[in-house]
Length: 208
Image 1 (cartoon, rainbow, N blue to C red):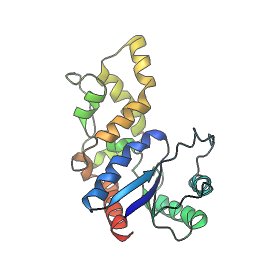
Image 2: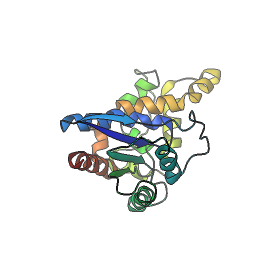
Image 3: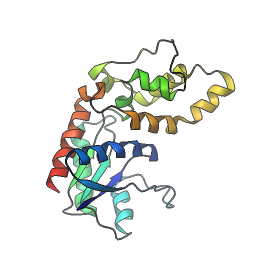
């Protein structure tokens, strides 16, 4: 039996999480089919809130065995975000198994711990410039990890002027690649928010 999973993120570059979901399912001996709607391409450009996203998807008439929702903690606690997602699922798709993926403070914090991947994605793997990245759980305390990741990629690229401007426009692509390359057993595994994601995902896949 193939498990049907709905994944919704905060943007299309969050789809870099999909291979990690597939890998966890495979390790549990489960085949999965993951749907990750591109709300912008579907014409729902103002669709941002979790309940609204679930409502739009439900109208297509498909059913799913598991719903996975990514929602950054931002300035709230992880528990608050998980409750927010639980209420949205209960309102729009009652009774469906679900998990919330809640990076602290933002998903970019997970990507700040792999210097080698940052240099590789910045297309300057042999660069020598110091990047001053956080280590361990300090990544979850960075006030604006998205800005830090953008700035770090720019520094790692070694680009200047027009080349730098062009490079920075590709940030969503770079973010997606970093997420795909993320080693689930590497430094990110030290972060409580990643551990919770993995534990919740494994438990949910076993149960459905």
